[in-house]
Length: 250
Image (cartoon, rainbow, N blue to C red; front, side):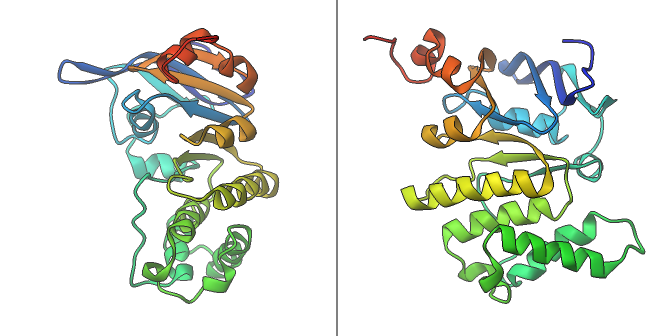
């Protein structure tokens, strides 16, 4: 995968990342089309979060490159990549606990604009984000007082405040109840519709990832072993063996 398609938001081109003798990513190729939701699944330790960290500039790959809308961002720092329109959440949520929900979101919003930008516009966008993430009623509450589901929504809200074009969601439904997962799915659909974002979603809740994704990429032991529609991936023998631990019909 060496050439950038005009429809592509992001291209991960033949990326390898090593930690000592371990290849956490081994010649991984991923293309994300504008406006789509790409699901990224695989067993624990398969390289999903490592891939996010390479995309965001936290890790530098030993081989390959990352292209964002045709620009090579492989050597950029995380804050430079964020300013180019990439936002992400983290598996472990760490809001500023003694700050209010609104203040947490405003911190990200202020980072996303150059000095001298109109603060009023930032505040207006933050209020839109509060509404779509269903946090309006908690606007003045300290983040420490939120439930785990609310903290995960706040994590998404903070990423949205960066005004991204590409959003990386890393296990935002972990620890949620069945009903809370349904609410999260509705929220992600609403975010896509409202802001027109491209998303990569890492998730272990299979019914969620299968229902929300346009396409799915499967990693196992640092390699891409499958790619396709949710239906194609769910019927793939390698996926059933590597990810689910059995073969179809067994």
